[in-house]
Amino acid sequence: MHPDPCRKCQDPYDYSCYLIDINVMTILMGVVLIIGSFLSFTPQIIKLFKLKNTEGLSFQMLHLAQYNQWSLLVNFFMSQFPQVMSCGNTFWKCFANITPQINSILCFLGFFIPFLQYLYYQFREQGYSKSLQQNLICALVFFIYMFVTLPGFILSGLFYSVCDSTFKTFTFIFAFISMCCACVQWIPQIIKTYKLKAVGSFSVMGQCINVPGQVISLITLIMSNNGWTTWITNIAQLIMQSVLLVLLLRYQCCEPYKSANKQLQEKEKIESDALLKENDEQ
Image 1 (cartoon, one colour):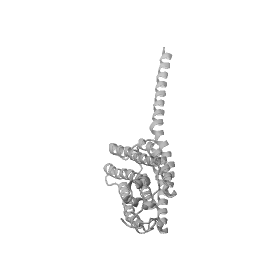
Image 2 (cartoon, one colour):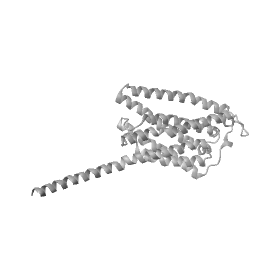
Image 3 (tube, helix red, strand yellow):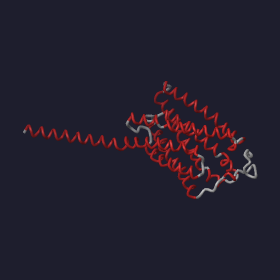
Image 4 (cartoon, rainbow, N blue to C red):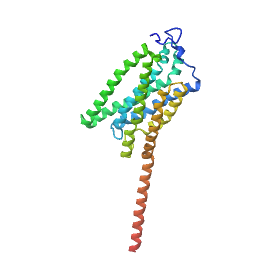
């Protein structure tokens, strides 16, 4: 284990003094959050696998989600780097402190897998079209961003950590990137859903689980004594995802009912007109 650059604990190889006592309720909420995140992203992955098409799903949303979730993940681990390192000293207390970070890994994978699925199914639908080539370039730019920042935040955490002002500045920068992406990430999907006026390949079930999960995530982050830079993104995502969920429920539940009701009224009108015509002829 690498020694703590901040030397907060008596033993430089001991990070346990960074940990706080987490009550049982907060731990349970963290576990529920992890399970909920897994359940919320699984329906979208399964639906894409079954339908094998990209209709109704916005690539721009998935692309921005990569920057949002990865930047949020980096921010989480940078702001709580000593707590993560403490897992080598006391695992269970460390686990109780970093449940939001574990959840952020699941959230990243929950968008990363559909991102790869989208590219694959777009290739099956269109071949090497101009649209696919543009999307592949976007994907390549993100992969470069990810692989450059990965060793950067790990090495800076090992040698500078949370007591360094430059380290704190970069922690804030990643939080700001994540927040900006969270604010605009869902806009392309909201616009596409509104224009299409249909759910398409987007999972309503996953979104129904995801929105309450954002509320639990926000509460857990605050109760786990995480800084405001780690949970402000959740507020932005909660607002945008709630708007999208309202649209999805409208087009999934309300519109088919209205359409069926309209068809029934038209059928009754045709039958009524036919009956009146028959009576007039008699």
